[in-house]
Each structure stands twice: as structure tokens, then as C-alpha cells.
Length: 492
Image (cartoon, helix red, strand yellow):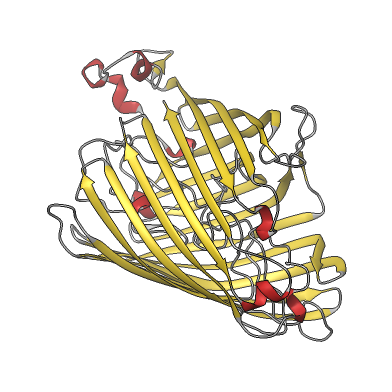
């Protein structure tokens, strides 16, 4: 059940830095930056530099953290703070940062896969340890992860939820200031999220996260940046360190840029254009599996303007699938309005999402849009839907009854973009028979989410979803389903 990436920590809010909502991210997850760990001055605003979403001292990608403030003993509260900065010389040019995570999660599905069947319970465990070694401009970062899965009626395990031991990240980096610019190059296994979360993410909902293998380089000035990359996707195994490999049947490369439109106390606006190319030698549409080369051209406009937060992405896709032309579109438009910063701080929002469809089961031009590595929490907590052949609208309301508690309720209406194409699951596979159904209404969904930021290191999240199947799913034999998921997350 992929969901959008989440990291919830509590401390004193910093009003000057308000990371805007990400695509597919409920408003309650787009919390203000709290107790920032990075004291370094970056040429480009750090909340928009493409190096991970900054939601406090702990970041979505742990390598995006900078703990040099722990050089000062007065900043340390306990033994774990000491592990964030371990110097090997007097000048502090050579130092080590240690990190870790433990996440315990339970998910319940009343009708797994929207099929009338026995309920499913998944007990999931994530354990991660990391080390970040700095030697002047040189850096080596690594993470080891373990994923455990148990429960009732959970079927055949997959490597994204069960893996004895996984080298989740291991890369070397060279970077620093050159004149007015910040330059860097990185090679190895790494998370990559420099783009709209509705198209690429590390899928934090999965026990084992999505990573890439290859090279990435960047250059940043005060108001403009550029990030170029060339990756192969990493295929997961389940037994240990030797079966998680770089997949040579795939390639993901391109350029993401960034331009600062506004960056003052209450108004922060950025535009991120991108041009990407993905090759997949085993892409499947309909009954055909073949090589696909797909190009993505688009831009993301995002940020905050006083009480308004926006995250808008438009993307054009073209290319070739098994000798057939590709012509597809995506649009992701999310906005949230803070009604009152006092009291329960009510926020109202709505997001509209569109992914084109048609041609998956025929010949001629393929119009089916495709996300690369995106999570799908914005469409279904139980991974029932994806932004492929989808048109949906989701109004929502978020309340904060306490400083560390947020509650979000959302109602979602879903239709097919094309009545001649299938309905697609979060994993990107089609619901069998939906391509032959008539009508466009997929179904309606009610979402409820609660988050509790217990301490700066400990958080609790619970989610509830009821998906009422519409005419298209019902004609193909699918039914309603209730999902409940809760997890406790500890990071240091």
C-alpha cells in the first residue's frame, strides 16, 4: 500500500519556513519545519533545493540532515544527540553522524484487492541504521535496512515489505562552494526525490524504500539551480545483501531545475521545470509486455503565499511502446488555505488530479499516463488506485486540537479519464475486466487521518479509509473495502 512519504516530529514551530504541501500529501503531513538541524547556509533556499523535504531535525531522506550544531555540547540533550556529531579531529573537518529508525505498523483490509474475501492483517517492521562520514568536501553515506512481515492472510510476501537485509543507500559524494555556487556530484545507491511527488518518490509507506543506482550532479546559485542524473532502478530481493541489484533493463535520466520566484517571510514561491527519460524493457500495457521509452516534460509551481499553499504540476508524456507512439498527460493541482492560525488552526483544501488513459488494450497511439516511482496515498491509503486513467477531486479539512495533534478528513470522487481503458491499482496493474465495463464512475472514498507528534523523535499515525465501489468496479466483480492502518515511528 504505497503512501506518500511522512515524517512527523514535534518541537517549537519555525514560522519563517513553511514547506508547502507535496502532491499526494494530506495537509496534516505538510507541517511547518520544526527545530531545523541544518545550520549551514545554502546558496539556494534549502526547503526547495531538491535534497529532500525538510520537516524538522529529521528529514525524509536522512542524508539531507546536517547535525554540525551538535558540535556545541549545550545543544545536546541526551546520549542520542551525541551520536549525531562524532569528530575525529580538532577542527571538525572529519566527523561521523549516526542515525536509526524503528517503525512498527499494523494494517487491516476488509476485502483485500477490492475482492469479496477473507480479511487481511499485515504486521510490518522496519529497522534502519545509517552512517554519514564527512572528510572536508568528501562524504560517504550508507544505510542498512531490515523489513519484517507477519499477520493473517497476507498472501505471498514481496521484497518491498520483507527483506532480511538490504543496502538501502551507499554513495560517495564530492561537493562544496565554488565561488558563488554550491556544486556537488554523487555516485552510488541513493534515494531521489527531486521532482513532483506524484511522479517520483522513495515510497516511504513501503517497509523497504525505493532507491536508484547511478550518478547525480547539481549546481545551485541564490535564485536558480539545476540537477542532472542518470540512474538504473534497483530491483529488490528478500534474502540478504546479494540479491538487491541494479536493474539493467531500466534507465531513468534527466534534468530538474529550480527558480525562486519569491522568498520572504510569508511568501515563498518556486517553479521547478523538468525533462526526464525512462526506459523499461519489461513494461506491460494490456496483454503486451515490451520495451517502453517514455519522455516527461513538465513544471511544478509550488510554495506558500500568506495563508495559501499550492502545489501544481503539469506534465506531458511522449515516447514509444513496442513501436507505438505515446501521447499522455498528467495534472496535479493541490491547494490548502489556513483559515485561522489560532485555536484549532482550521485548514481547508482541495486537490484535483488527472492522468490520461486509452490505448492500453488496443493499437495505435498509447494515451495512458504513467508515474515513475510515485506513492499513491493521495488516491487510496490501501493502494486501490493510481493516477493512471484517473480524474479525481478531493476536498479536505484539517484541524489541530492540540499543538502536536492534527486530524484530517477528506472526501474523494473518482472517475475514469477514458471509458475505454481499465482502472489501475496503486502498483500500476489493471483491475481485470474493467476495460470492458461501461460508464466512468470508479467509486467514492472517505479518508480520515490522525497524527500525534509525541516527541521530536517519536510519532504516531493512524489512517482510516472506506472505498465504496462505483459502477465500473462493480461491473468487473469488485466490491467495497475498509482499510485501517496505524504505526509508531522512532528516529534518532
